[in-house]
Image (cartoon, rainbow, N blue to C red; front, side, top):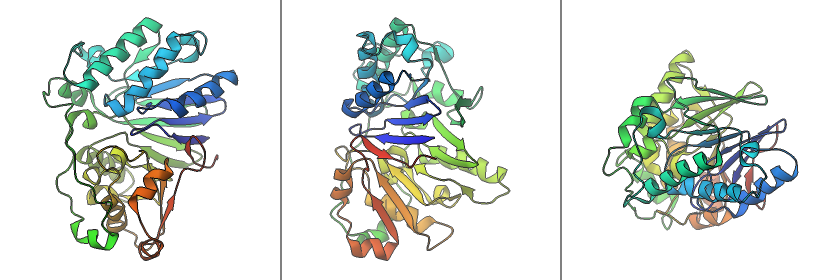
Length: 337
């Protein structure tokens, strides 16, 4: 199995490979490196066995639109032979709630465009929810959908502010030491589209990892509390976790970090939107760990993002952290296992 966190602009594009099978999770908002990976898959006589669109935000679906447009042009041969299955939680196919084709919100428009393209291309399309059929198999890798529920997906479509997002100030120019006293769980993300994100637990070779989309902190707390209780109230071991919402401190809390045992956290963004990731996010992970003193690695799909944080070698030693930039031209690839 191999997991690649592709360079995809401000957003996520994650490729999971297992025994000649491929899953693509989101497409970011820049298709430059995504299309290179897709070309390689096509030239190897493979396909995208599963395409997951976690939620409707532009920085997750704009690249998917670009991909589907290339499918329409037959760049990858017969569309339904190259994309075998799509999972996309549109309210339209859950309870017949339409996404308006005309909307002042960009993500509404793009979600509608995805629906049109999927139907035009004749792709197999379904929902994936915690309530029903939450398990996907990709080769030897098992994916379990931990969120959303049907009620969450139904709830966001009529939220008039659902696709608004507030800018925040940058903490990049402050040292980690100066930021320590500002590490608090306030001003948390409550946006409905983020709450509706598909959250996937990945299991392979007796290890599990977590892909979080942009899920809101209270929703992630609920997910992890359930897993914690199922684990006899012991810390949940994860090989790696993709931090939600591109490393925003508004999406991480003590009740999240204190339930898990993990020393690898992935951050996906080019750093060109909302000053993400926040340096306070790194401090939250370090501060809220139940087991203190373990070295923690933060893995970035863009070296440019890491450079913007301006974290010194002295700070790395003080806080016992490792910061790893992208290790390939197309992004960050975890070692194949």
